[in-house]
Length: 315
Image (cartoon, rainbow, N blue to C red; front, side, top):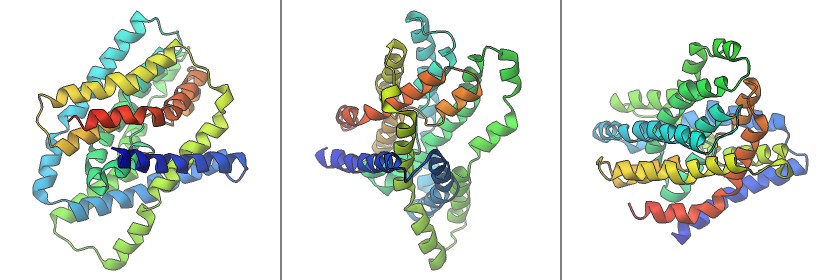
């Protein structure tokens, strides 16, 4: 467990580098946008393509999708818990929808992928993507709909929720990289050496750039501007207690490979999505609450990791 924690510490040191370089004015908000595009449109698709083509057989792939039921059920159950929680503890108007979304959906790529790589290595990537597909689908459909309901101009907010936008988010370059890799694998095609080398260089950018992005976001939102309140405590309970425990509970009666369940637990216990403050601003929801939830969930994660590692090693 100590080795896994030290590997994660290295990942968070990269985030700290992103924060410090933002402070030194090497990075700007625009830099985070550029890095995000590089990760999502180049590095991550090649990562997915190379992983599925080099590490999986047809039989292993079919077994992979048998476990999809756990992330689907766990996220729906977590969403129900979030709605009950916000009613019992009277979550403030204007943030109820965003509360449910960030209580339910996690940061599966920018933090989830590097953390899983640090703990399990490349063999975890397909399971990371499987959870990512479900998480992204729910986030950009039901999740964004809940956020839109926080807009005082509900009718206008609902009209701007377009299915084509949702489809573009779900069928992201990362997922397309996975699908192309899947077709390549099923056809038993050999990857040209130059393409494998080129893709490996790009794929290796995924972890450092992802953590730089988080560091930049935290700096420009401002640590001193983070405000802790009972609703943010509820978000942290959702992210770090309810969500992983629901996944663990489902894994006790739905039989899946041990590594798959461990990855799902890690993915369920990730910080808040880094696009949340932007969406909050777009839908006139509580942007300060969104930014503070993101900031606290990231900053507390390093302290939370030892408890999470104990949980996954109990699986």
